[in-house]
Amino acid sequence: MIMQSAAGFLRTLDRLYGYLLQGMMAAAGIYIGMMMLVIVYYTSFRSLSLPYNQYSFTFIEYGFIYVLMLGSPWLVRRRGHVYIEMVTAAVSDRVRHVLSRIIATVCFFVCLALGWYTGVLAWQDYSFNQYDDLRAQLDIKRWVVMAAMPVGFGLMAVEFLRFVFGRELMHTGEAGVHE
Image (cartoon, rainbow, N blue to C red; front, side, top):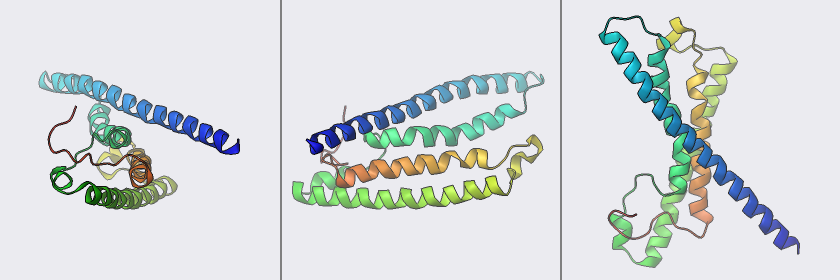
């Protein structure tokens, strides 16, 4: 009875976590659309020598990092990130299972290290009130861009860890394009 309720709780938690990742991916998609509109605005106004908002370029520039960090955990969960199946397709199922879990473990530790490092940097930038050196005249704090990185890398680490211990493997063993 306790095991069933614990399993039900974990399924609910996983579903809610999945909704969080989908929401982050949706936010990344909306941000890309907004970036497109701001690019049109920025280039049109600059080309016509009209005054434009000086923050528009920063919105686009920082947007690349935010889109990457918001969308990447969902892509890892869906195996939509870039990886090579040529090696895992050329080996036996048993070797592929071991190799896939080793690769996922390495990815986990890399994302964990990057998440930790960027988290420390974001905290230091926030604590010491650091400005972005390139955007100091705009009064933009450096932690604004750094804050997305520990979140993105941390959640990617969680997703790679799911491939280490979960039933699903990161690699299918089939080379080529999948649908």
